Image (tube, rainbow, N blue to C red):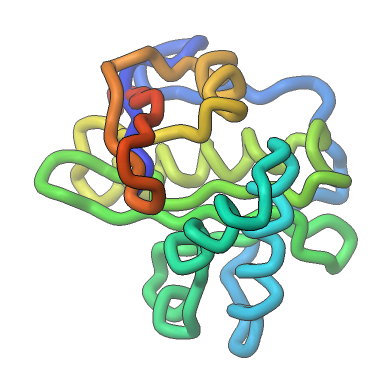
Length: 173
């Protein structure tokens, strides 16, 4: 489970976008039959940080998207010229929106997909009544969330690796 939380740059609950956004980049709902390809995208993105095969195997279940996930209305795809290059999934726990997943294909990093997906997560959680977005970030991705306005809010245990802790970040909505 990913967790996040505090005021984003540019105003309360507003995630800033960079000028490097690609003009052909758009968000869309997932399509039926995309679960396997999106799971592969999540695994490739996680592997970008140099994790070994044993670590990746331990994370596989947590990084898997099912057709049920995709049909929930809580998943969005970053699409660049007809190709899925990123995916985000949210959930709600009380007044907290939870960033369950946000992954971008390694070859697409830096094209604005992560920011666009995070903006969607902020707005989607706000629209569902959440007061903050909680992100339990991969240590390699924590700086990205901080650049987008998230603030540190402690640590959280990894759901995949016993004894591992993750930075917890938050964006107030």
